Image (cartoon, rainbow, N blue to C red):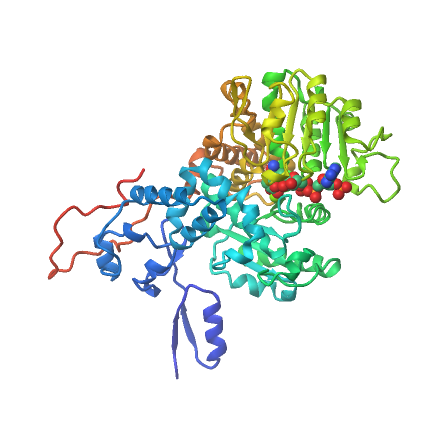
Amino acid sequence: MRIIIVLSRSRGVPVLTRRLFPKSPSFIIHRTFNDSNGGLIMPGQLRGYDHLREPRLNKGLAFTLEERQSLGIHGLLPAQIRTLDEQLELCRLAFSRYKEDLHKYVYMVELHDRNEKLFFRLLTEDIERMMPIVYTPTVGLACQKFGFIFRRSVGLFVTINDRGHVYEVLKNWPEMDVRAIVVTDGERILGLGDLGAQGMGIPVGKLALYTALAGVKPHQCLPVVIDVGTNNEEFLQDPLYIGLKQKRVRGEEYDALIDEFMAAVVKRYGQNTLIQFEDFGNKNAFKFLDRYRNSYCTFNDDIQGTAAIVVAGLMASQKIVGRSMSEHKFLFLGAGEAAIGIADLLVRAMESDGIPEDQAQEKIWMFDKQGLLAKEREEGELEGHKIRYAKDKCPTKDFLEVVKKVQPSVLIGASAAAGAFNKDVLRTMADCNERPIIFALSNPTAMAECTAQEAYDFTDGRCLFASGSPFPPVEFNGKTFVTGQGNNAYVFPGVALGVIASGIHHISDDIFLKAAEVVANKVSEEDLSKGLLYPPLSSIKQCSIEIAVGVLEYAYQKGIASRYPEPEDKLALIKSHQYSFCYERSLPATWRWPQNHCKPQGTVKDPCLNDS
Ligand SMILES: NC(=O)C1=CN([C@@H]2O[C@H](COP(=O)(O)OP(=O)(O)OC[C@H]3O[C@@H](n4cnc5c(N)ncnc54)[C@H](OP(=O)(O)O)[C@@H]3O)[C@@H](O)[C@H]2O)C=CC1
Ligand SMILES: CC(=O)C(=O)O
Ligand SMILES: [Mg+2]
């Protein structure tokens, strides 16, 4: 009789062993070890050298002498031992020496690939400088050039050819404790259109913010691209394109793939796994939100996350403008995911102030490629989600004329129509409002409906302005305005952390209203006086934590949390779910200097001790 003993962390290995040796009884010792962040590591299976190759374990020159000795990597590193702070200083220097943003992006990707802790520490400590690189606007350029800068896989690609085997593909992802997935099919990447599989940069960037802003642990995050082809002709001809070179598959086959993906996620990682939909084309985005919102733990960031950040800005603006939500008139340029999502949450906010739904909808006008949404359009020309904002009559197909007729107090651009808020539009807003509110939400920067400078110049410095991608501070008449970033990045990381910590099964719109209130309450008089409708980016991490606590409170109040008992100290629970941005000790607790080994003299720095 043969006995095979399998020591494995993977559920797949014992199965494989049984298949290979069907007649032998195999004793499976399924033993796993957690690092202090909850990531699974297997000391018994790791060579010392792996600590240098595996980005999750690598500390570079920050390995202490003891660690180098005990891991058997002494001599594989030069003699210098650096602290985490010293490494960060060097990273900042290297980062700043790259002149091109795309080169900075590649530097960050390579750092991530080399030393995960250092990457996240750098990102989280200097979010104002790093966020425009790992996120909008540079991430848009990175997706366009993804084929050229692709180094190593950073997420999972599920293609239409994997139909029937999606669960097997998902099992190839090496992490077993995934709690959050950001998935795109690349059809509408920012305002750049169909970038197919190269849209992978977006889930990767969004999830980097999960960790950097809310402290969701990196090994719990999984970026996914669903590759069903692309209709981007340039990419189809480009030898560097990394995805399937075929036109997009649509219809039943596509829907079945997404259904299979959702079911596979639950099978592999459990029903509480959060699935964030990102940058799908709008018909699919609305369809999947409707289809899955009550059966999976899911939300659509472009529809719901964006809504929360715009409603937050409007709540904050009340302190200056003195108007409640229902006293505004809203005009949108664009009637897609972002615009409809914002409008729906605005209606909900007005309803909670006692305004009936139909009256709330009356205050909202929307303009798409064909003009103002009007009931008089031919049948079939108003998709389901647009109908509720259609007006009886369309005064004109000219946007400026609509601005003049409607005289909105709030103008919201979510169209990717660069420059559509031109001088005449902005001047008209200034003529009919003491403090016009202007959101140019489209990303990346080049797609914005107007620049910050234009907004202030053409409204005589009276507007309250926010944009989806960052603009530098603006001078007008001797005053400096700091422009706020109206971006869902203020919302989704905190919502995700709150959802993970409370174990919510389904995410309602009210959670996004709650998040909006939290963000609005963080805007100070001082922020508003500088022109900011949002807390400064320097407090976005605090904002994320407060949103997470707000979500947790809401979940227990409404009885939708699934983790019991309810924690008394909700902040402490949230913190217990967060990643540590400090190095862990890589020394086994029992390790001692060998007896015959003379401990080296001199100062031995311990990088774990001297960071905050
Ligand atoms: N700041 C933030 O946090 C976010 C910003 N965005 C940005 O918003 C933009 C739109 O995203 P999303 O709503 O998801 O995209 P969609 O494709 O869902 O919607 C775009 C909308 O804009 C309309 N549109 C396009 N061009 C024009 C034009 N020239 N004149 C009038 N309307 C036009 C389209 O009209 P039609 O319906 O007729 O096709 C459609 O209604 C993108 O740039 C995206 O990056 C998105 C999410 C979050
Ligand atoms: C910010 C974002 O989600 C978008 O532009 O699509
Ligand atoms: Mg998006």
